[in-house]
Length: 497
Image 1 (tube, rainbow, N blue to C red):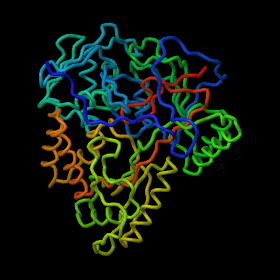
Image 2: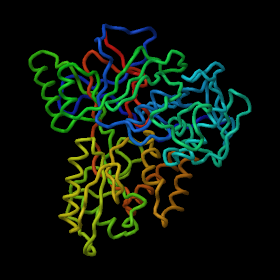
Image 3: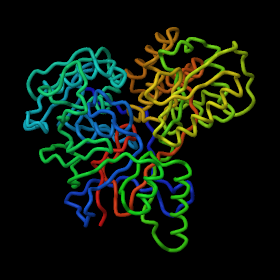
Image 4: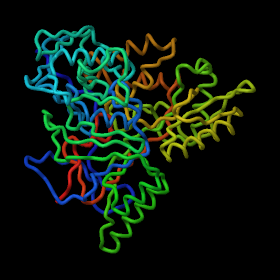
């Protein structure tokens, strides 16, 4: 019986903060065997972020905050911690290959949703098939799936088109979350106004214009138990989040801080250390887990212009620090995009006007968007209009998490929207990686994909940067504290003694 094959990986080890702060980066500790309670403030445990959630439906995940909500309210068959890429069961009791092209999962017999309905294999099949229809790009790691069988209420059998070492990871992404078949429509996303029905460690208590509140789900069964009875997730600007962190009015601040705010907070930490004191908060270590990239959107009428795509890539070369669409921390990384120098720019037709959207709730992305726009306009003589993330555009600046922190997880931006002339070649290369466990097969193919990405220039790397996550000193993250692509997941949040 074949065993599950680990993917290409690179383990991120704890290291000292690059900015010279004393001590080492804090990383998740194993889940405690007993309760870990300390005195908590009268208000709920508070998380601040500028990126608003748009949906509580796992098939409707559009950004990293949506992913956080799905990870907290629902379960998936599998769980993966991004730093180790160790894959293990979550909702399932066990999952394994029973044949080369058969992946089988077994469920416990007393699982329930927050609706009170029993959770069975039928719900699993319904959820996966529903997500494949409603969110096919989020489910691209399940591309080898041929059919799903449910021989009994506690067994789910996936039959595959070919042996696939990535299939289990596809079952761990937020869109693969299991929903209540009796409560969800098969072909429509569940509106925000209707209560989500999941089986995760939390359940939704309230959603409003300022954020959402989640509470502990008492009937949760799984490896990610929590002691937090209530957590408030609120939307906040960079200035609001900075002030709340300094004043002790928030426990976690995620993503929302501007580069200037980060510098000020780290300055406070350094000054406190020099004075022999504690600043009251610290930065959680997420070194170079974010890849800033410029993506040509499939519906752009300019995307087919190879000269224009190449010109855009070359125009960013002088300031580019990332050399591939696969981050350097991942085994198999290849330097495929040139950095620095003075490239010869092609001559473009007059009157080219592009639109570029970005995550406007992220101050860092807004700054980057203005820099990229200026570079393209000055170096190429084209017009670039900036629009918000909800508007149609030719280009999109992204810093979102990958589906999962594996080589193929990171490459999905490129692989799931190939150019017509590259589609066949890329599909063959991806299948070759998925169906082999041998590094001597996988590594050359990964290199070839990255080099083809540089030729196609539909996804252009800009920089690898650290994730932005600050915690109060009285707070810790333990166990599997982050989602499969470095999304914040709140099941690991604990009060410290």
